[in-house]
Length: 337
Ligand SMILES: [Zn+2]
Image 1 (cartoon, rainbow, N blue to C red):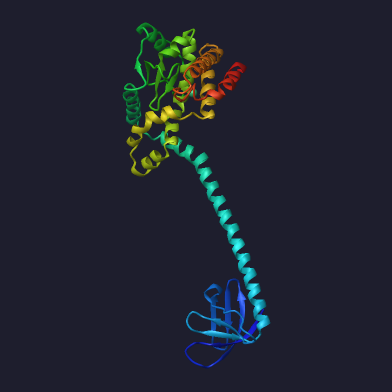
Image 2: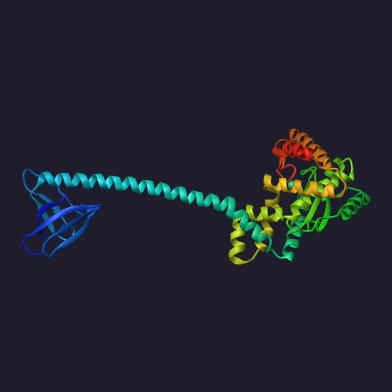
């Protein structure tokens, strides 16, 4: 739509015949030696007054008179519609951009973060891994853990049984086994980031045989082999990960490690893989896989009893307890092997 109009540049009184049209959100004004392209929303358009020509006022003092009032009204209407359409478009774009951003964030969280954690876990130096475990014990020995009350002979027989296990290539043998008691954590075992395994007295006392304890240790070795604790810790402490990444200093993670380990849950996937490794390891060493299912059932029962006894004080810990809702499923799967 093209309208004819008269343009005054605001400095001279000379009228310039021009044509007007709207392009998107701009007004295009063209004359013999004038071209102006102005944002519509920067123009002042006074409301119609009697039968006088319509006015367009430019910010720099220029103005335009449009005699075709009807045509001008139609042009404004079209411009308004396209402006609204443009606005709607921009809403859609904004929404699409938001969704895209959220998807990227979700992907970063679900895929990127675990991937980054896996890559990082392989790069954490051994001395730092050892320090993490040492830190873990130093911190928890003050709080949740007490010295083990198991006879030295009992502990030794478990250590010996562990040494006799033949492992497939690819590692997984614990750096060390530490026995402790814990009134709060009850029957449990933990694979620590540095490859140590913490075995609690209640677990040993709950087991009917060393084979059941070895089954638990086999499961923990599955975690150690794939550095699940470390990866989980890295994943759970995104801030630490970012800091470690930028500063190249993983030691900041040491401080948060014990807390994170106790408060976070292993993913189902980690548990499934640790169970699968345990089944393979037990099978290869002539220990029935059902030993793991048996001890899992006992752990489940023990923790359920403990939970009903002191529902408020129950501390959420990883591993057997953490996988609590899935324990039935895990037992079923192991029984099916
Ligand atoms: Zn586990």
